[in-house]
Image (cartoon, rainbow, N blue to C red; front, side, top):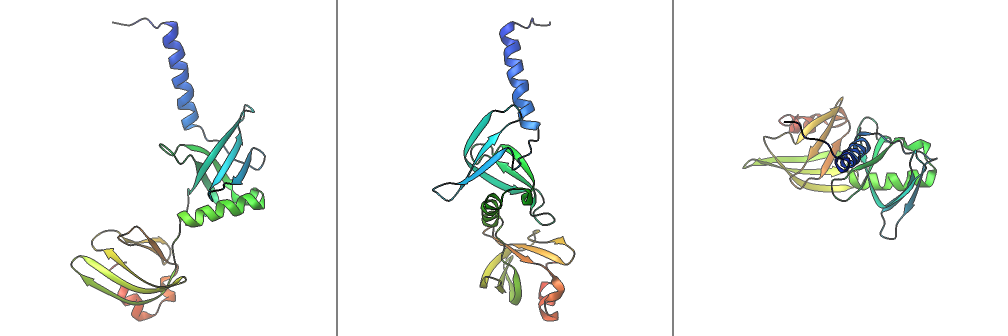
Length: 191
């Protein structure tokens, strides 16, 4: 049996449709429609002017790379940090923003995507389902633990690898063949 749609129900449907359209639409964030500012707490805020001319201020925003390895300065998703991290908009190219805005955003991205580069592998020892790594990175010597049997060492490009430790830290090997033959042999089990 079909129910009759009342005027109040139509208003609710219109509001729901508008909410869905906002969620699925892609808003480009450009130098012309946005102003990024550093907050007192070291975060970044955004004043965004929509296509309708309405200004909205976000007291804090977060940044996520859509292509973190192949295009680190292109297609940056700007999101609300609370609730479900709803996307506010997309920056196509950081180089099209003012220098101070680009600097603030890169600073935030470097914190989110911190991954020291492994320059030397001293040793990797296995025991009870874990491997214990002793390496030298571009940030200094480091020891960390990797769970075996998972995909915690994986390729992110030609001869380029990312290593995830049990604490969620990431380490990058930018070019496998810049390591010594002994170091590559230590990695044989993982790559």
